[in-house]
Image 1 (tube, rainbow, N blue to C red):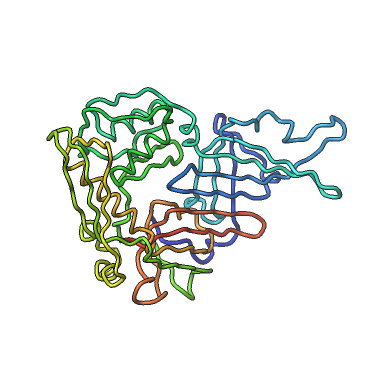
Image 2 (cartoon, rainbow, N blue to C red):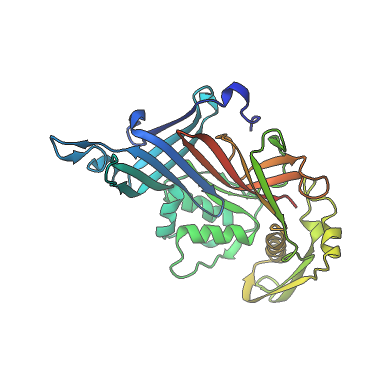
Length: 361
């Protein structure tokens, strides 16, 4: 990840939309603007605002009557700046909805809406091997059966499960997402690649924001309401044929880029340990039980410090990366944050990016 775009690079926003199947470009004069919303917990969305034209001779609309924008059509979106084409962002998705506008005294308009390729996984239930496999094996097979690349699937050291249970009517998306959350992984699709990986929230940030320098606005929030210092998991071990317990504490999830003295903050807040009992849950080993406990502890604490940051648009800012936010207080709010959502808006008014972030633990 390179440094933020600066200086003359931030000038004229540029966006190009192409049909993915034939690489043909939609004329730029017909495009007003685009919005792209990416979220680590749900499929990414896009909106393309278009100028619509009505031909008096044929009595047809240029785009609304064009079958090339029917739902299911694949598009490629490229966005960034005219002066920095090498740093543009990309998104591949399918059209899912059309929203035309007909206002008296104004030209007709059209908004094309869609999702990235992970959205289709919410409606598909492919049969995959669930015996004597790892969670990563399942993610790879689901990727391939949905015509996605499995290059983003990690987890070579994950344990092999004698049997992975799949819920009745559980679609591919929900299945992979549940497996990811069980072991503190994240799951998303970008372009044609499925990612199933450990969050990169323990990585140093090489993109920085600074108050009074390159931040339009930053609104953080600290809440100790859900903080816990310990999680105890109780489950049935298939291997040992008995109930087992695993305990994890804050020191097990703290990282070098996280909040200094998080344990002391939690203790001062007077938060007690949280015990989670998994009724009827079967695990293959103590390692799996501990992984679930770690995931639960992290989930309960990751909302301690969150925030919304708005800045000049940059297509390199995507969910799943860390950023360093400086000079917003020395004690708590300055530090490394993990990007969970990113919204890019480009149009006649310029280009802005809005990030949803959480403080790294």
